Amino acid sequence: NCYICHSIVQGIYNGNVILEGYDNLRVYVDNGKLLGSMKHASGFEPMPQNAPKLGDCDIAKTEQWILDGALNN
Image (cartoon, rainbow, N blue to C red; front, side, top):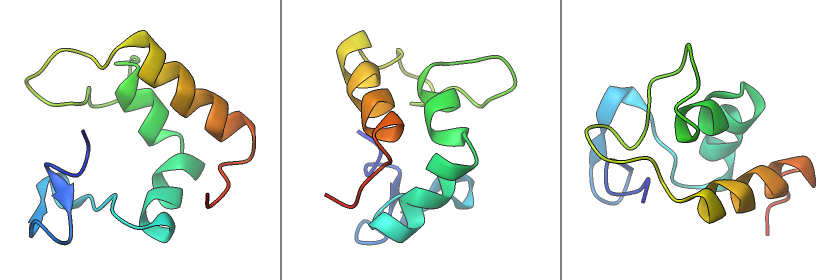
């Protein structure tokens, strides 16, 4: 879902945010912006932009991955 707008390969860096590749993604995991945006939490830019929030299951999987240490797996 994220790579459509935040991908090096696609050449699209909306909001100057690149989420492709573990090192790029980890920046947004560590600063809380990835999950905050996915959850449409107050103070975060809701993502995906101009689209409905991702499903609860997808958000829960991402949150659990982060809680498990956001391993490069």
